[in-house]
Length: 194
Length: 194
Length: 194
Image (tube, rainbow over all chains, first blue to last red):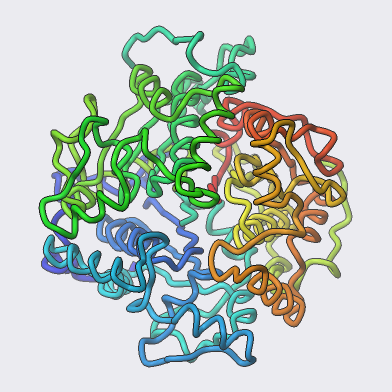
């Protein structure tokens, strides 16, 4: 693992509840031989909805801050939050462009899966989050990256949606296929399909 | 584990299919040393939709009846089914109150994620369930509690939604942050994000 | 495991990325005693939406092609994609029939969870998939079966939806209850609720 400074002041205190318990084995598992093994978690981010992207980024950043190894595999609608904020439009043909028009890329433009009300729902959620010191998904994703979380896009989704690697935010790994993602899942201590 | 009497007559027979197979090691895992370890499952209940809350309560109560240790972490929309049935309204400011108006709290008021038809879908589902001896989510949650399932609300969601501890049903544990939930997940034999 | 021939030409190359790496231990785990153990994955297919059924069938077929043991438990809306394509209507009473009318059974008739646009969304998705050599969910499910993936319907869902065993595609296992599904999950290396 890279040596990183945990940005205590950034992550909302609620998330960190219990993190600073004086447990020297946190995030570690004692295995038969007496060695300890770092815990790992894999998230498949499929939805791209605001609330689920929030869940993904909260869990990923908190897990990384707790010393776990975290990988997120971004697929289907989950790919769009990885698109750079300055990219207004993705897609190489009219169908792919239409997807980007109806489902605007970028983690700052996510919709709620319900009660979206033409953007009023997300606006309320962001205000409520601010009132309670909860970071936005985009901020949490940045922190997750700083803490070493692996961001891995799905090659097939990139092809189908017409999203190219240079349209994604910095620090994203090269896209991989499902076989590689499955290998990570099979080795992980917990796997979440979000 | 607390000593509980399994309420055989309550849980729908379909769920219990295979439960009474004469396997003395059910719910147990033989580890290297020859000891056995109780299986554990963690559910993150994020959705709050009728069908997914049903899945959560069916899996949780059945797993507990099978001798597994079960914890449910209620977050985002998933928090509302934990609100007491006599509480009509939650929220401390107008935005939080509006969420409770649009998304009525309480496990007896859940909507389907599709085919809801202004309540006709859930009414049909409840009728079909009754015809086939399937318990309602609220009954399954009660049974889950009786069987020792841990119900753990997410602190951040309670803050954001403006839900206070005294508005939740009895027997719910104190709210925790994502770090605590992740520790449970990393130790569990299976983790489901529902 | 049954001896099967992996249909390399069928599975989209993207999915197989990394599959043919010369790693003799792929899909295997070395345990304390020096033996190796085949990795296993359990998917709970709850949604029945086009994109999530795609995710289920891609992950299942790819995992099986990688040598993993895969089981899919089909429940709630996830049951409908298992219905035979020549069955237009399921259900024994008017409520169950109405569900089948609103939510047409069969893996060739799935809707997107969003941007469905009365069928235009799925049509576009299928065209984009064809352009990029991605197999349809129905084709992937067939391949999954050929590779030994276990397709297990939920008994309670079949009862509630009024779907009978003879209405399901060939090769599906007898329906089971949640207890049996949970046993599989507790033993699996990864569990996904999709």
